[in-house]
Length: 81
Image 1 (tube, rainbow, N blue to C red):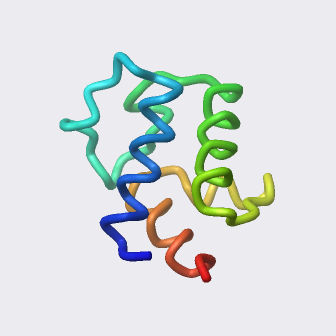
Image 2 (cartoon, helix red, strand yellow):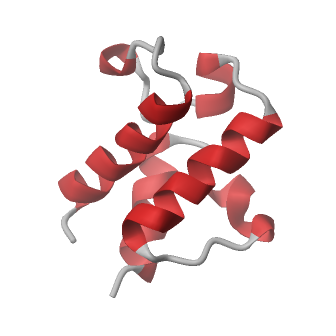
């Protein structure tokens, strides 16, 4: 998958959990939870959505590695087969 495809998957997972979020103005270098004021349960659901869309297993210990949009894409790019 390309980085653009991975980014679209992450944004779709975020929009499923936070449909009111203005993703067009999401800073890809800033923590998503802080920008969107989402809680840990929403964050977990985003990770589940990403897993379901990509098939990539994301251990809970790796969640901090996926705190920004750019970090999510980079992480997934390393794991996608």
